[in-house]
Length: 241
Image (tube, rainbow, N blue to C red):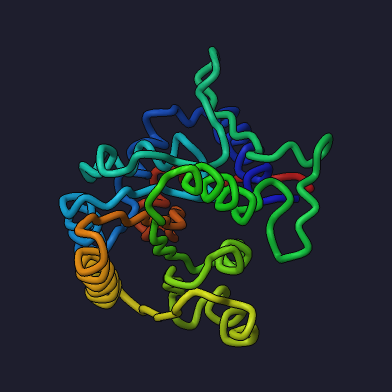
């Protein structure tokens, strides 16, 4: 069962046990995000970068977390699984791609509900109509981030999180990736690497034509919640297969 389908079923079970949407929001607000990652996002936005999210999470989770940390306005686009709170107060989560009627057919390790490579190709097509070539900096850590890394071209940058699934795939298939690759391991390294490449691209483009154009794409997922967060969902949860 795809992760987002499992999450939808979990939300149904939690709702049936009396968990309110406010309880879910409270847990999401306690989701840890490294302070340097928050600062890196704000810095990139302040420098004029166009930040977009490509994520296998869902709209409700991402919106809630971004708003809580004051980051929502930093992103121009969020590509993720749709979700909404229904009339009964239950959070519903749906697939980005309708894999039952129209499977994406990607040969890479993308989940059936979302191929991030297809999303990146769509964005690249919209950028190709512009006179100036855009530089893409893509950051991610999951298996689903390997496919979009294959779509990047010369002059783009792929920043995989070291010792995470996408890093392993990138290392094993380095010859297939045209973009420059640079790993990161924690919040401090994330900030350092990201701002380094933004500065590099800015200088290169200023020397070429005096115009900056950087597109930043980031996988965004809810991290494992700390023990204190689990206390909000103290009921036993059984999810049938």
